[in-house]
Every structure is written in structure tokens, then in C-alpha cells.
Length: 391
Image (cartoon, rainbow, N blue to C red; front, side):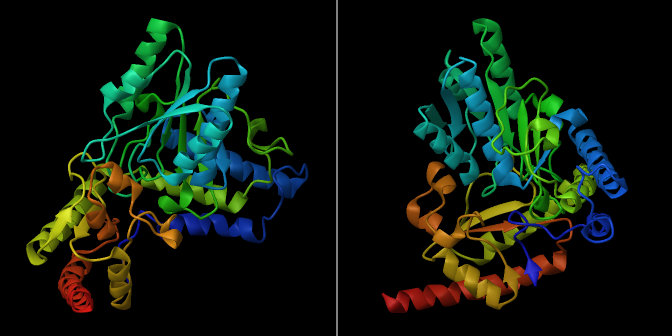
């Protein structure tokens, strides 16, 4: 299989898999246990927390382990918003129309609880305007949630600039607005130093950077107001009840540490392969168009529209040829509809309906890219012919 869907999930890193194995069988103790097996498990969790904190330039006490990106995003948005409202700070949120559904649906859930939500738009590249963000801030705004890098088109948002806007707003109005970012797609490609970003909360998903599925990270800056979503135990510093997924947590620490190394060289190499794929597709397939820009975006992400096609049919055709790609967010494909991200960017609905996402990794080879470029034009032509004859 030629796997070009790393934005959906990544293969586990060898070192992460090896690190987690002992905690699946011989070292199976509950970290809450006071006996030796429990203490050993707790020590492994503590070590992983320190690894993650170092990768994020955070304090270990600011790192919480969750079941994945969806929980981390929901916990940040809902937990901070409810805590701020309880403190009397207000009930207004700001987010964007291009967030992952975990963020959009969390915001919509809060609307049902009486919060008012402003959904910011974006430009044709998928980038949010700092000026529009600043205009949306109000005295009753309690939280802004803007993803660091988009999962469908890879656009990187100006999080540092947005953080500066919130700080200026606080200085002018004496009212602090918390800032959360969904950084699920960022590890391995972008620096995720939480101090440099200036965020109060940040969400990660382990399986997006070579860790295990079912494990995630929520960074909460010290003293950030927060009400837990899960209750029933004192785990994760009283902020996330439930017995810890020790094996997944151990793998998360190892994988994030590895992803933080050599980002520049990795990005340069993969960007070259992505551009080779893009240029080859545009040259060989008439009616193909890139969605978004290829400048301020993740180096491994390529979103291309094929005029006159339905993307799911092309995904299936490539799958039969041993090539794995995506027609958008893997989390929404079971109930397919045109990408809300592409629609928000102003992409015509028929173009959005014929769009594929190719997402590469450091393991992707030039030979694989060349094989895709050999197979793809023929599959596109065949499907277009079939579509024309059916009309």
C-alpha cells in the first residue's frame, strides 16, 4: 500500500511501540495502586508527562492525558467556557468556521447552554484574519478557539498574533480572554512551544504523530479556569477522572519527543515530495486545481480538486490500485458531505465535491510519488469517461 493519508492517522513509531509493550502485560498495575506494580505504572505516567512537558516547553503540572484529540478539544472549550461563566466573566465565545468538527460541535453544544458564539470566516487560502478576530472580541468574551493547522488543507493560523491581540485586549479592558488551539496536526511539522504561541490551552492526539490511538494530551496553562468534563476519581490532578491508559501515555511521551526532533529537515524533505506530487498532477491532469495556498501551510498537506468527479469514487478507485488517500476529514467520511472547510474558503460546491487530500510523511518516498503520478491520471480519465457516458 502507498499510504498518503497521514493526516488521518500515522503508523506507530517503533520506539513508541516498544516502550508501551511492557505496560500491556507484565507491568499492568493501576497507577492509583499503592503497591509496587501501581507505583511502577505511576512512575511511567510521570515520566511521560515530563517528556510531553519538555516537548511543549510547559510545566509537567500543566499536562493532562486524555483519550484523544476529540476529548482534549471538547474538554478545553467546554471546561474553560463553563468555568469562566461560573466566575461571572461572560458567555461569549469566538471560534472559526473551519475548525475540526470536535471544536465546532463543542461550540454548538455551548450555544445550547446559552452561550453566544461568533464563527469567524477565512480567506481563499483558509487563513483567519487577525483584524476580524480583534473586532470580534467583546467585554463578555471568555474564550477563543482557533486551530493551529487545518486538517483538510493544512493552512497554518497566526496563533501568536491572535494571542497578542487577546493580551492587548486584556490590557485595554482589564478582561482576560482565554485562547485555545487545536494543534492536532502540528507535531512533527511545526514548533509547538506553548510559551512562544502564547496560548492558555492546547490539544493533541497521539496517533497523529506516531503514538497510539486512544491517547491524547491537553495542555492547560497554570491558573487557567477549568471545570472537568469527567468525574469519579482524582486522576490527572483532579481534572480528568478515570484510570490512566498507561501504555498509550507512555507511547505518547516517546512519540511526541521524537516528533519534536529534526522538524526543519523533515519539513524540507517532505515539502519537496509534496510539490513534486502537486506539480505532476497539475501538469498531467486537465481540470485539476489546488485548494488553498502552498505557502503558509503544513509541508505534508496537498488538497486538489478534480473537475467533474466525485471524490469518493476516486478514493475507491485509487484504493483498488493500492493507494490510500482521503476525500477530507477521516472523522466525517461515514456521512459524506462537501467539506465545510472548502465551502468556507469559497470553493464552489462541485469543486469541493471532487477534492482529494494527500497527506505525506517522512516515510513517503519519491518512488511512491512517481507511482501515484503514473496511476492517478488514468483513473481520473476513466472515471470522467464513465461519468460522461452515464449522463
